[in-house]
Length: 88
Ligand SMILES: N=c1c2ncn([C@@H]3O[C@H](COP(=O)(O)OP(=O)(O)OP(=O)(O)O)[C@@H](O)[C@H]3O)c2ncn1[C@@H]1O[C@H](COP(=O)(O)O)[C@@H](O)[C@H]1O
Image (cartoon, rainbow, N blue to C red; front, side):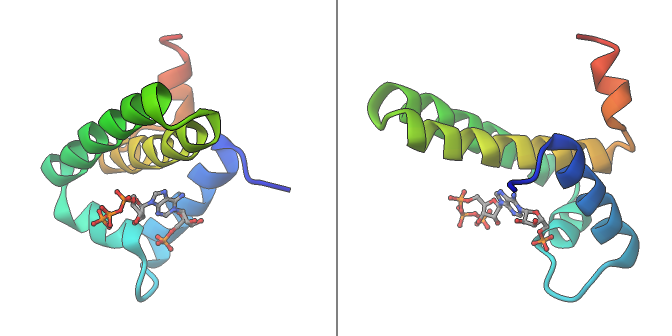
């Protein structure tokens, strides 16, 4: 079964803690909030373009990537999912 938001977040928390060789997440966390923020803006634009021009499946793929980069930013800021849900 595909992972959901919570499962991905738990996986990324573990990557940040254990820092395995070759982890893109670790590299992004080391690069910091400025670089993570740029990636969020890039992925958000790709969601927009896919939604308008590339169809549902491509939009879903881009949205998944945006969610990943938002989770990396959450980790960089030490924010847990519950810190986000309380604002919904
Ligand atoms: N879900 C994702 C995920 N979504 C997007 N991305 C990253 O975001 C990039 C987005 O693609 P682009 O088209 O923008 O590619 P790009 O321009 O070459 O991106 P850059 O690497 O240059 O930033 C991908 O190349 C990945 O580097 C992700 N990287 C990791 N994950 C998952 O996160 C978990 C931990 O990954 P690692 O830390 O790499 O082990 C694993 O379960 C992965 O599947």
